[in-house]
Image 1 (spheres, rainbow, N blue to C red):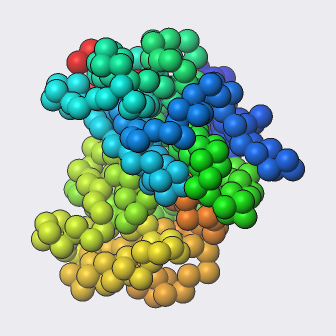
Image 2: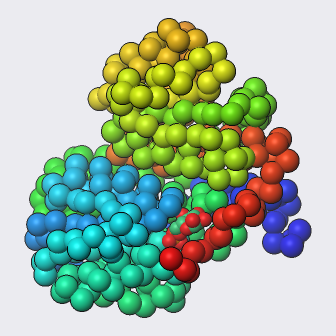
Image 3: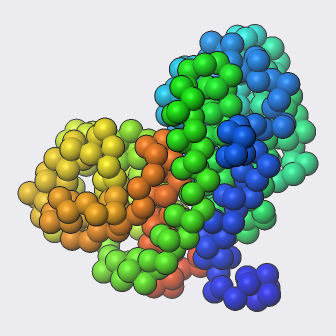
Length: 369
Ligand code: G6P
């Protein structure tokens, strides 16, 4: 086992550090900067149908459901196709409206999650086209779907998903770009800009991983917290959800992810000097709004740990801790902002003596309802 961990103390830590490589593996052969194209061989025959889709439904559970939420922002922004993101377990039991021209995309690391599989069976029985985004080759979901794309992240052993998530988001990005280009909903210069930035993501992830010491210090400061709040807007909202899930899964600290603007409708009541509030405050259209949300937290003496774009001085003056990440295209920020949150959760769990790779009551793959 020590050999399998490749010198790391836990599989989760190894998998977090593998991300520059796993993201690269995910777009290898699917992205060509010189010729300026992206493509996913597995769904080639369905590209035309995807460009004509009136609606796409994404079904998933857990972390994969968070990847689907990031996918919703990507698809709607780039392809202008309406996307609905569903918990597989809710979707399958509520007599959902499924049309024959709908495309249902299941996202699953293991490809074995019972609820996701059942949701697909239902969609198929109603005549929808079903596609899959799976990590495990030959898994049940990859076999029942009409077509799909693998994430190629390599085996993920830690129960808390890390590299599978960033690979899922990478595939969704490639898929959205492919459809957008074919459909003509993206202009050439914008397309080129995004693929150029996507190609730089593995190096930028590696740069963030170099901040491990700083992230460990932040973890030490909040390891005894009983609660934590994660806030983000736009495509950073799913990142906030995923950040909170990582913390609660492995450290057993109660954590909630919230759209930053919704804070005033509830969670703000919880804020006091004991409450760590993680805020994704990178540059982008909602930056100023997030800055106001940070001020609201500070006015109630909450502690702010902000993920910011390199060089941002405004948030630095307000926050208790700032984690600087390299700038990238707005659509790609989740691939970077997720990384420090994974590492902080990891260090908190280790400091609390928790079983990081096999948290209590959780399973890597949930094959029963
Ligand atoms: C379990 C795992 C999570 C995972 C979820 C969905 O809860 O512990 O890490 O996100 O199942 O799994 P899937 O294999 O379908 O992505």
